[in-house]
Image (cartoon, rainbow, N blue to C red; front, side, top):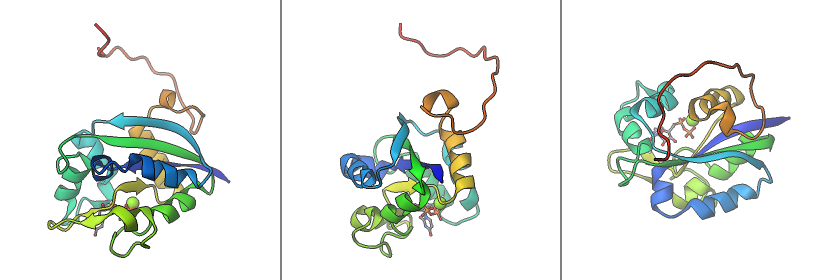
Length: 166
Ligand code: UDP
Ligand code: MG
């Protein structure tokens, strides 16, 4: 069954110039990229993304990590891959959460590390099941940023001021 999965190249992956390597590894899956962008991660977005871990002792440090506060710049690359068994294929390539336990040829096994503060800097995020993928995709992307129709949409009136080119 075709399914979408949210992939984040985390700040350590960007800082270490691993973007190309990671995208090359992911292209082995033959999945289609249906959305991609660079994101300046807000406190709210980071908090909501990792809400399931909010009671963990490392939560504060994890939020700082995702926001880029440990790596000079607040940026994450967010992508949606789409296709047959997308979640399993991408999780397989990513490897285990703990980079020291991840298979050495996996992305996390190759490039991840554990910080002295105890956070797993594991280079990449991959949604772990279809419900999580849907929740995360709706958090990181709007319907207009995705080139296929993944979930039902509605039209709303918006009168917010937005930045435009001067
Ligand atoms: N994490 C950590 N220590 C832990 C568990 C998780 O630092 O003991 C971090 C790690 O960066 C991980 C993220 O929190 O990728 C989210 O954890 P989750 O259990 O969802 O693992 P994932 O789905 O990323 O493999
Ligand atoms: Mg997870």
